Image 1 (cartoon, rainbow, N blue to C red):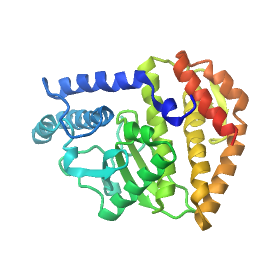
Image 2 (spheres, rainbow, N blue to C red):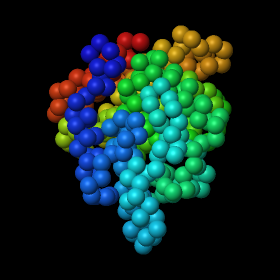
Image 3 (cartoon, rainbow, N blue to C red):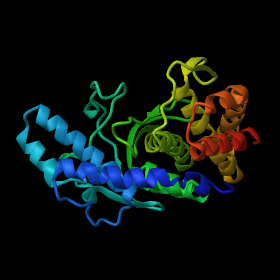
Image 4 (cartoon, one colour):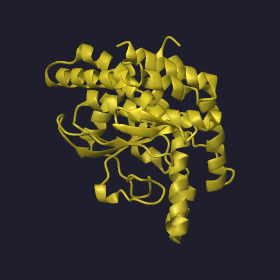
Length: 303
């Protein structure tokens, strides 16, 4: 696999997106097909999960109005909130943090698209569009096209701050993240979270069950972590390293120093995982997936 595109082109994921979207739409509204919005199958897959999550929550709350809205909008009415980007139409939002609930479905706050969803302000949508372009120019367009469909921008911070970002498995293709107002940094974090979404889909698509009794030392968490979390880190962080190495070539000033420091830090962390990663990969039963995880790890170690 000589290119990033070849790494992210994983046929089992494509089949998963098609098959699961069809099944989700059959649950939400029988005989419904993905609307012709110009979005790719992965986007329909993402939006169908939002519609199902919203419909289920409405049903549990006996909210017939909301339930009817979701069954009438199996794409969560995303077409009204599209932002054009280099990887296609995206949904870019910046909800009030108090609108991010916590519930048993997720350890972290999350947001489900619904009838009250509004697009982010123009400046944030422009920021996101440039970030998608930066990631695409560095070779990560295919990853973001399929695994960063809904972008939920949270707090505005500075380069010196800790930036929080996350995904949840119940909403694949959706990413939640702080930002510093710089598209190059936002692109890095988009790649990281899209990488988590990719790996979750890859594991589901191949039926890989990772032994939850196996633990490995994580230099990022400074603790022993289950193999699932360790493998996720050893995939997502190397992806951001490969991106940062490309982004450094055009960066100057504070941004250059930030990216250089980030890359140095990640080199140190990743080097500590070299032996353990080899053993962790033995838990991945699908050869194609195992080869992809190994390739990204090796490429990042070589930086």
